[in-house]
Length: 204
Image (tube, rainbow, N blue to C red; front, side):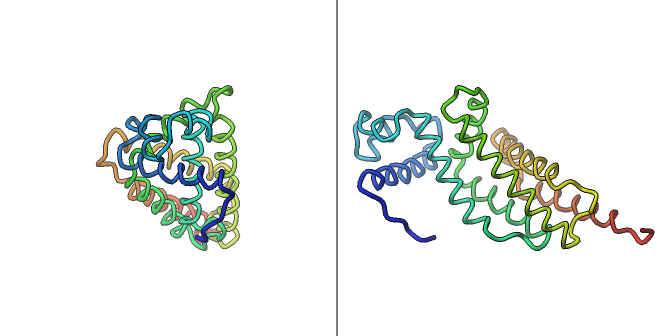
């Protein structure tokens, strides 16, 4: 990923976000107090708040930065060519997230709180799910054109189910770390292949 250059104020924000990602990954969501984040960024709490306004806004931008990292890893600029490839990419994302449980907890907690329209992170999650749904729908439409999915399957509906599967698995994993998220997603891939096989039966 190409490193971007920023004016001084924005550069400090980038430094704080990078530090916050590390602190939350190492100490967990509950351990990432404003004091700890400020100390790790060599700032006072006032200085930290100056850059982000509130703890919720800082956490929202931390999740936005994690989304950028996940998007690069998933290769959002290139459609998968097979259903297996799509599932492998999703499995790679959840495997990477499993290595930073504090960020997974942050995502789950903040996304639940942000269902309230007045929450500072509400618009971020609304836009995030819209982007994810659009990307999933377009990717699945591409796979459908390649004959990887049955023609009668609605790509938009399936995209929503896949988003729910990923978020749901991450929630289950927080209760039971023995949950193999990547393996469960592979099972979803198997269902897609079975549906495609049934949709292309010799009797058609």
